[in-house]
Amino acid sequence: MGIGSGIALIVIGAILAFAVNVDLGGYVDIHLIGYILMAAGAVVFLLSLIFVLRRRSTVSTSHTAVDPANGQSVTTRRTTDNGDPLV
Image (tube, rainbow, N blue to C red):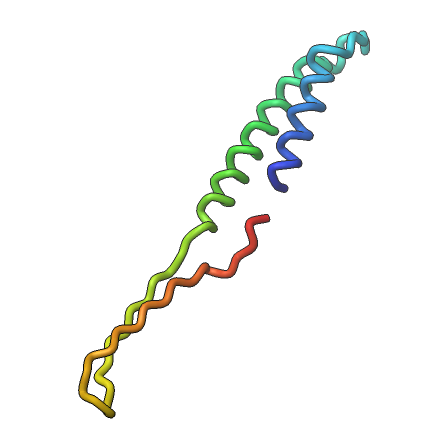
């Protein structure tokens, strides 16, 4: 489940909570189900957002060596992404 799923749950829950006015004989409360879906959608949305932001990390590597030809110190720095997609 991702960000889109969380938004979909929020929308479906809002439709059930605010737009549907059906009496099912007291066995099922459609408005309560709508509120539960909106809360679940908000949780899914926030968790997905946290996981997406945690994946955006970089790794920096520094390597120092001595060039055998002229005896000078050579420092190589490389910055790479962790390779995970943002989706």
